[in-house]
Image (tube, rainbow, N blue to C red; front, top):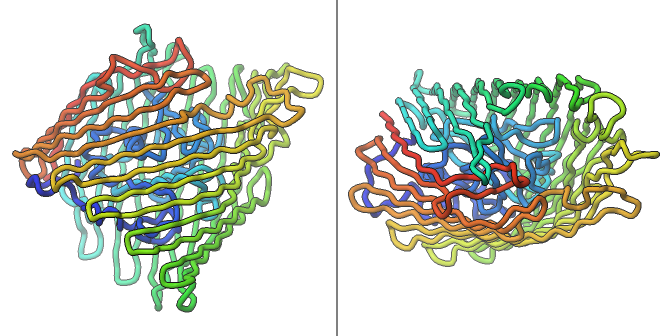
Length: 614
């Protein structure tokens, strides 16, 4: 769905290795900066990476980031995290789409089944592993994913695409963009898909097929000193389940952003959005969440040494839950308010040394004031080399699950939210090294040591159990290494690879009676590795391979696996592309997450796609 021109084998992609190393990102410091200067463990998934992966959804695209854990649970569910604590309700990763936080106050996480855009409209995805609470707020504990779509001026003209395969039964999309006058551009899009049931290891259908349709728009006005963006999406879908009827999901959002460049180069930006989501699980629960958000920031230079970003915002979330006999959130309706103010100062200590000091103050409904400071030091001993270190504090504030959940819905309860559940806290120590040793290669390596306190535990109530009450009686630390790199073997062949090592040392506090123990904190592999090869062949053919090796998961136990994906593409003429993809080619099926024997296993699949931009 991207505009693709017929290319010679000498042109592997839109960007060279050196250009990729200096691509501008905004997720680390809320201001444009070259990737080579960012004092954080950040990996950028480019538009070309996405096109050549053949991925059809945002979670599948995120497999390209070596600093993420991505496990597919079934047809519609994923477990995605960074630096540990992975689960289907992972709660330490903040995700944004064009500045809109896709967050549920139910469990402080992300419903991945509704996060979608037209894949061909994604400009890049910035994946930061490590805390980002100073700029992005609570729940940016172990990482930030920032999905950035293309400016509407880059998507003028028409596009149509269709794909079909064994599991992805149908995937269609269309877009039309144009220009209204000298300064205003726009685009409209629509897309939809159908996915088949997954199966258990014994070959039984899980009955989790689903379908979803989505449409949206974006318009951009660009003047001499001002820019204005207005965009929105509307979606509706249903998910099959064995009993009680289909699950249904629907929602809509609209976002506006204005920025002005002032005299002297300072920039003011204001962004606001409204997001409505509806989710109904027959026999279990239903939810309607309305979110209103406004944020403002100002970036300016103070003298020759200080580059300051400051701002603040307000978010109101009205969460209305339809309870069932199985579980309940009490009270059924909550109005949650979130206020924040932040300040970050980048101080030039010399021509090649930068010190960054930051602080965010945030007030939430449950724990009131939270303080999240950050200090980073970056040193460039040479133009193509960066050494950096950081110390940060981040918090995961309570969710409705922590405070308001009851199961069953009436007494006697077996499980109850903790009325005094406090924020989980992290003190993170990081260090990294990024280098471009030769023109054709880049390497990044980072190490971290994270100290957690007040992690969630399940404690017997006084005089119980039952009920069990959610509390903060777990603590501990994690440490690990993340490394990745790219190498252009020739002008027509590029290789990339990544590896992560993670070790968790968690324990319950003295006096804890948690019957689930430490495994309840998440399910993560110690080792994870990946590699990709992208080759341009004669006659406008492309051949891409991707392999990933994931270590075993401890609880519930999931065996280690190695998966191989392949893509063969042919650029028929300018703007027209045909491709065939194969996934999980090394085995008939394997599980990635969940407990046997009822868990889904991912099958070997083949998928074909035709895309035409005109």
